[in-house]
Length: 195
Image 1 (cartoon, one colour):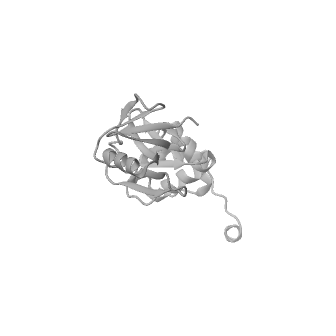
Image 2: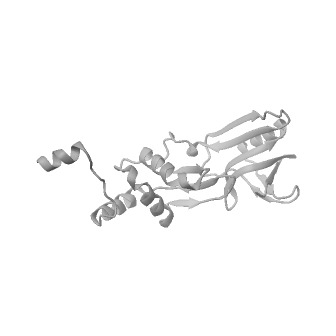
Image 3: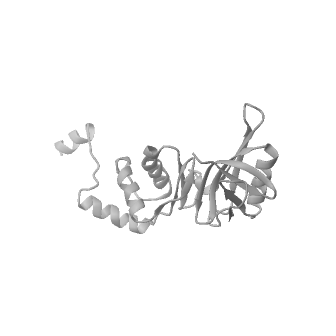
């Protein structure tokens, strides 16, 4: 993995994970001296741009994403070696329990993306969604551009902007085509057959 560096206000840190679109930052995980990591965090939250590059010099100015502006959570801790500090800056829309319809999905393993996407959707929408539809919902989101893959390092990141009306229509069509079904088993089958 080619590590990036970030510079802001004369401080530099190594980036072990980040998510960006064009020229805005949606997530960052940094390693470095505690003072540098905290100073970069403070400058980004104040609205200043960080400069990303694969070398210490140059780089493109990248501020925090305006659409995610609001509450950003910073978590940091000293690493066991004692010589480095790890800090992550995560927008509120990446939290499962936030009230916003749109969300940022951060995934370590690509195989987990569909199930995690389903959980976030089911939490935010009033539509009845079945867990067995997770893969279909994931593919649909990518195909309709409601789910956008962000340029990322160290993590897979997706900007999700569900459209409830379009989703309701697509689910209805898929159910009518029997592309989406809900299997019933056990006691429910017995009750249905007895009726």
